[in-house]
Length: 486
Image (cartoon, rainbow, N blue to C red; front, side, top):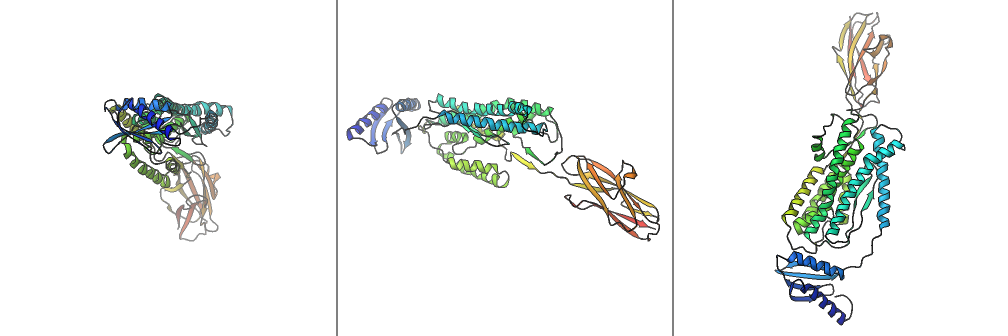
């Protein structure tokens, strides 16, 4: 087993045999360049506990035992532990500092947007952006990763402190992770460690979400966009359920930064619980399904690629990340002992959390729409005597999603010598002109009057005059009026 004299190797093999023999009956052993494989006859009722004792003993001596069941035989393959460099906390602290800065900056941007502040670097934005976004989000992520860390220690594993991942707005972070520096000991450890973070983070997210929804309901509500479009945040099912306890007003609204921080908490939980590769959901799936878990990674990545290409580009990043880290989850050291009912329930709970937290299209850009229509009030045909004035009424309707944008109307096809004027129906006719700039409130209509002065020498025939939109508007069509001169 490795390099050294025959005497050294024989002594090492004998040491390994004696360690295994203190926990199991041995009936055969094989030695290769990479491992010592010991055939055992275990007591099924104590197999798991005795193997765990053996693992901890061998860990202290620099060995890793791997329990397998092959061709009707139980065997323990023992290999040397790879040499590891001790982690350096400076990297964890540096990433924590950078992520704190990026989440504070993101919180400032969200608070400025929420309060319609034109400036970013203000005391209010820093204080409330930190209080309502950065602090709760870092708490959610910190609890998530700390739970992984503590559960790893509970199973006797060497785990690093969290590595936070900074990002630009609108999220400020892509989450965090810990590094477990040795193989997973068992299926139970896979489920326990994989589920600890998402469940703890989910439980912490709920009170933040409820408070965020309460503050959201107190804030400004509108059904229109102000300027430049907007990003719509699509809530997961759990948010909809929580809204039953904290009802939200109808229409669009500026989401409160605390409500968005909780939204990010649900979003990160859903990503981590995807049953693929090295994600938390991949740990749980490998623990529950064993080798069959590999058949989940491919369809999960396939779905992310489809959604990413056609609906939300962000999923492409996570699909490629899963592929980069590895689609296939390594087996635990004890891949033989079955899970108990408690771990199966935990796995089902995590599946429920995934279903309630996942949103196929998390964020959507909504472009501004300044469309409007012109409709006649009454008939758009009238009969007048030459020398009289024809009057038409119309309604100009805001059919877009922007509040108080300006519509541009003008009159064309006016015969030579005729007089025309457009003005708001509520205003004086003295304001009449052949062009009109009209401010349209959201989801409202404004009445407009068109006056046409027919000269006394006008021929007795039908004349068509049009009120049209400015060519800069999305739709250049307008409305035609017919004047029958008799």
